[in-house]
Length: 524
Image 1 (cartoon, rainbow, N blue to C red):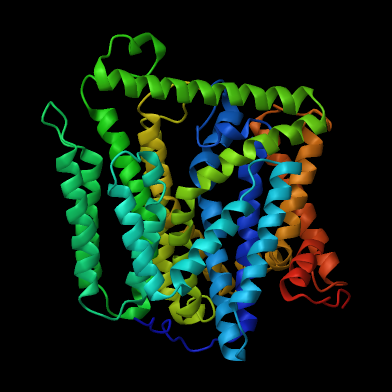
Image 2: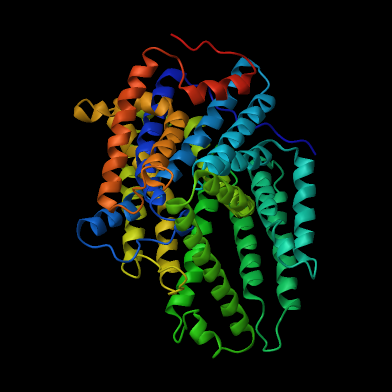
């Protein structure tokens, strides 16, 4: 079986596209800086735990705005831009007749090195590691031979059904899912789509029936997975044409379905009458499997609380060497956590790549009505879901499962992709306006040096907030966001000054040199 070529798209001019992408990167970097500064004043392990208890007044208002208008949205924008950059490099390589994989492989490897150093030396909230691992998954999804995809799909499916492997088998689930998506993107045979639905779905139904418990209740996660495989396979068969829309459909499905399932599970627990919080006080009153599950949750939250206290103790009162040792020790767990996250990133990358290859970025003027609808609907839906969740819960105290926050947080994350697309649409509309809004172009140099500025933000924040720096850890949220905005303003100005004299930012120059194995000219 040979793999048909990727969908053909007409080459698009690069000048306008690059300006738009750089502006979008600069815009995203401001939001990332505002979101990240909190976790130079709070343990990174608490990310995703919402607004901390004890805030009031203006600090609470600022924290609320960041939580529901910025957090989750801007790393998604950057992920979309990463997918756009992938599509742009692939397109240029195809037009020039250059090999793509060796160059992009080195690009990913260098990015991973940047991420590992950033995580170990500066800040454990690094996102570059995630992007590098996600980029490898994207390459496999888009470019692995079809025979290898079929083999990996069947192999991983068989492992997930093998009795006794437990979590070790389900660790292969992301590969299974990525293989299924890859086959959908490139399959030309009509029969393959029902096969993608029927084979894994039937096997999972059999596994669910085989693991029926003594009380007559089947293993419902397996049953739900079987149902989803069948439905998704049938939808893939129904919506396989036009081929050009497959990446968009697949990406949106992955990103939205991931958080929809988490929201569904959290909602079931929250709205089930008689649900009991998982605390050590009530664990003893539960019996059998429920007691076991709740005890596992208690242990997980205790571990999180212990790690949170360790982070705060080391980063506020111990040496820089102690901080590096702690972050290196946590690196293994961080890499394990990337298994599932890489699948989500592949989905977001696919959506971003579609925007470039379909010409939405390069020829935005031709898509203004669509961008207006996307801005209105995306932001309304994306931000609205988070605000709806805030009516249930805005944060979880460390070490406690209140059963409401998981549901509320999943709703907010479910809105991340629609909101991110809406924000991107707003920036593109601003770029094509004639008034003051067009001055958003001032962000282009800031975005062109995105890697340098991202790393520099961590350096500045570490020096300001950690105990081996000025020790400002724990200042108010309003002051934190004010410092982040001042830093971004300074970096925007410095980026203009730097790029008036040099062609690349310092980190971008190193990245380019190691990617292309050459020494690019630095000065203009």
